[in-house]
Each structure stands twice: as C-alpha cells, then as structure tokens.
Amino acid sequence: MTKTLLHIDSSALGDFSTSRKLTASIVRAWQQANPHVRVTYRDLAAAPPAHLTGRVMMAMRSRDLTGLSDEERVQIAFSDDLVEEFLAADAVVIGAPMYNFSLPTPLKAWIDRIAQAGRTFKYTESGPVGLAGGKRVVIASSRGGMYAGTPLEAALDHQEAYLRGVLGFTGITDVAIVRAEGTNMGPEAVEQAMISAHEQIERLFVTSLAA
Ligand SMILES: Cc1cc2nc3c(=O)[nH]c(=O)nc-3n(C[C@H](O)[C@H](O)[C@H](O)COP(=O)(O)O)c2cc1C
Image 1 (tube, helix red, strand yellow):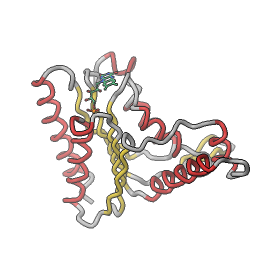
Image 2 (cartoon, helix red, strand yellow):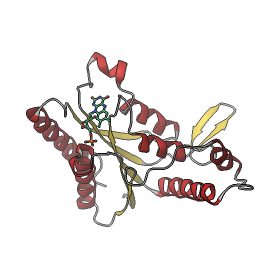
Image 3 (cartoon, helix red, strand yellow):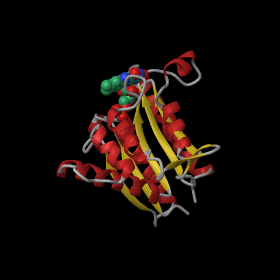
Image 4 (cartoon, protein in one colour):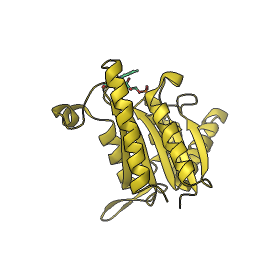
C-alpha cells in the first residue's frame, strides 16, 4: 500500500500544461484507489533548484560547509530536503514534458540535486548500486511530436529514455509512462493524445497501481 506519494510538476506552461493535467489525473486516481495516501507536492517550475556551482557541489559531497556563504548553505539545505523527500516517498509522479528533445531545466536541476553518491546510489567494486529502489514511479510524458515506435525515438528521445536511465541508476525499476504525444499537431491530435493518456491511466490503476 502506497503511504507517501511525491507529486512533481516541471512544465513552464501553468494552466495550459498537458503534463500538469496528466499528473493531476494520476494523483487523483491514486487517491481514489488509496484514500490514505499522503501527497507531497513540488512545483519545480515555480521554485527551480539553482544550477549547481562547484562550491555547492563540493560541499554536497564532502558535507564540509566551512567558508560557504549563507546563500550556499541555503542551497545545501534545499538539496538535503529534496533528497530526503525523494527517499521518503513510496511513489513518485513526475510531470515531464519534452523540451528540446530532453527535460525542462528545472527537472534536470532536481535530478542534479537528488542524484548524490552515498544517498541515492553508491559506487562499489562491482560498479554503481542504486539506493532508492522499491519505489513506484509514474512519468507523465508530454511532447509536441510523435516519437514512440518511430525512428525518431532512438535518435531524439532524450526525455523518457533519460529519465528511465537515471531512475534506474538510483535503483528504481518500477517505472510506468503515461504519454500524450503529438500535442503540437493540431486540436484533433491533442484530443486523441489526451483520450489515449487517460486510457493509459485507467489501465495502470486496474492492472498494477491499485494497492
Ligand atoms: C521550450 C519548449 C521546447 C519544446 N521542445 C520540443 C521538442 O524538442 N520536441 C517536441 O516534440 N516537442 C517540443 N515541445 C512541445 C512540448 O513538448 C509539448 O507542447 C508538450 O505537450 C508540453 O508539455 P507541457 O504543456 O506540460 O509543458 C517544446 C515546447 C517548449 C515550450
């Protein structure tokens, strides 16, 4: 039974965002299936983590805050909050639109904060090992063009493939994708994409996420 769900949005488009509509539907479905689930919400577009600087990165690794400014200390505390929030969640719903074949930069900045050696993965003699396994992740993927099952998927999808890769690196293998694609291809394509995405959500909750 999912106890804590972390709901993340990253689209810059506010009320016009496709991925925000999808994450809201997924979280609503989760709450209907499990009314006791506690939802934590993080809007990365509204409050983006800053780009990492060398000093902040070094202090994140060494835990030595000597000589850091107040602002840099706030950055470290924020990173710690993000890591703890991520590790504490049994499930994570991530709104991830495709921007320039990849992710919105606030979502990448979040990944730069949570992908920390010793916290979410570790290096061992036999290679890296993820420390954040056991979570369910649902990615709400929105994109203007069509990629799935086309030659463009291998060439240009650095969004879904990248997210799966980095989550896998932290040990998370239970990743489902709810996809609305072709959203820049006219009103009929948008309608079809949303119908398809909502069918995907329904199927997810019937088959695997009801608990
Ligand atoms: C800055 C920006 C870059 C985009 N880059 C791409 C792209 O590389 N490929 C694509 O298919 N669509 C691209 N799009 C279209 C979005 O992926 C599409 O509109 C998606 O539905 C946006 O989701 P959102 O409304 O949740 O932000 C881009 C949109 C924006 C705003």
